[in-house]
Image (cartoon, rainbow, N blue to C red; front, top):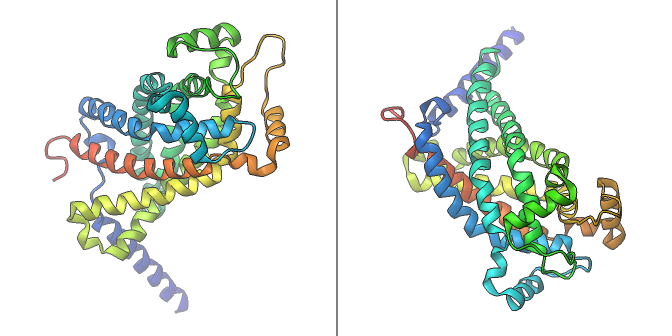
Length: 332
């Protein structure tokens, strides 16, 4: 008797969870999208978001590569006094040129994986909430790996441009993104452009998996508080998605900060042909020697703020993008 009661309770819980998901805002999946509209609008929207958030990335990068510890405010003042507002956009052209194809790869891999893994998990008997979390995690991993093929060379070039006027930068100066690309390629070959690629995958693949899974769960928790009946309200929808994304982005920034600092150091270090190429181990040892474990968290404030704000902005933009790109009649 107790087994049957337990079974009935499990069935009721599963039914309640499924009903809760059905009451949430409709998900716009890969098959429902007008792909050409999706990528064109996506390039425009995300270029604008990247421009707004780029100064925080520049400050974070300076903090990570400067040997003596510096305060974020002091770094901002130093950039302003040396280069003016233009200093906060060093390397932006190179970054933007790579962001468009990288975002396209990211979005395509994310939506395609989510649309295939979710239904497959449900067919295998996984509950809808668990299937949603699994699909989001798998989509995050595949999107991160796909995008890093483009993002790593873009990071290497743009970060060299960001810090080339800082006191810790090498004497080698770049005239722009194309010049930096040619010089890095000539000095280190293709390998130089992909310096930190493995570490980027180690950093961003698990981070994306946790981020998208926690974002999906945070949304469900938020709707329980707000009330799923308010999901038809556009302001409520944007507020819940933005808050859920900000929480997930802040947590991801904290967890991945040491790896990101090491990756950034690796990518901006120059080689003169005589010295040995920097390795993960030598970079980590040098960082710890400079300031212990605290050195691994230099730039945490700007990165935390940037990732939280970026996550909230990117997700709300992304959700708006998907609805703008939905095929006629696909949303009912």
